[in-house]
Length: 475
Image (cartoon, rainbow, N blue to C red; front, side, top):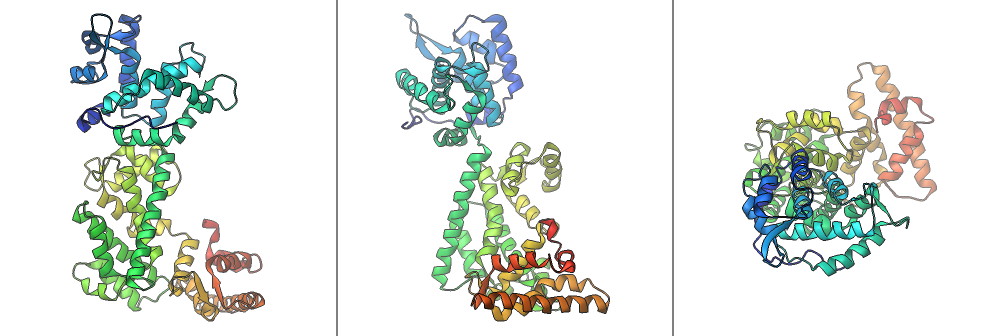
């Protein structure tokens, strides 16, 4: 289809976009009522009429009028197309992308059929794109180009070929049109979950490639903590130091926590974890003996990337409207209104009604939050990773006895009677024999996580106590 949104014709004014984003749909509908009551026949509005209708939305009507206006009529006076104005205010408002789409869709549904016919689609595209380009200061495509584009888009949206496009078809197309989504992100600070998820996948790919580069530079299966700290300062030099320090400290704590899973309270790993949590600034000497593996790094950097993707203005500030997307991206499940308000109160520790990057990171990496997200499968995987010294995803079968014991160590620590502990020890021996029999049958010298986990899940069918012990039903 070619590129609709091209280079800047005039200077882009971010402050104007910020002001427009405060507009709500309720306020815009009040403007529609004013048009219906006083200007029902006006396709174009002069400055006085424009100010009469939209003065409640902005204190800068003259600037907006000049941006949206065209020379019309023989006298060459400036006027604004009524539908372009309404489309502009809707598109740059602070409402969700779906709400904006619904407003624009209904605006051009002239026959009130709840569908758009071909000519209505052409009008939609012409007014919406021209309005968007004028506000953003981009080169405005010609009317003839947009007309041709409108016909093409209609054919693409009309999947059932009934010569009508309903809202679902209209919305689905706009969500999948990356150029439109990028425009909405850059100029109106709006993004859909689908587009944010696509950006998130790309961000995680970049983070993994970055870590792999560091591994190659270190020529080791893990990155030394001090080297990692230097690398983080280098790649995030545009972000405040407090946020980068918080990220680094969380990665180190997470790494120490991972290594301490299944260890005794008197182990060095547990001592290091407690010392770091008590005062990481006084225990910087621990860094010389700590290396970070890729899986731990990606677990924490995922929280960092989710925030970056949601923070479209890159100001390290997220309000309650953005919190829904933030949680949705991180958990891959849409939160309800109650959950959003509850989390806002929990995360916003300084009660300023915004979520700063440090607050988000500290919330996700807190002991309570970690425990809430540590399903049995996640904990078992971390124990497995501790034995994957080469970071290749494979463990020699000679470690199966230690791996099984570490897998059950936390549960055994909670047992107070000798009989229960003896029963678990007996179960471990049975599982060890069964697993070795399985891997030797396939002539394996190593095993991976999927085969180990699948074995334990299958074993719950023949060992009734195993399912209760692992609590796999939580997954």
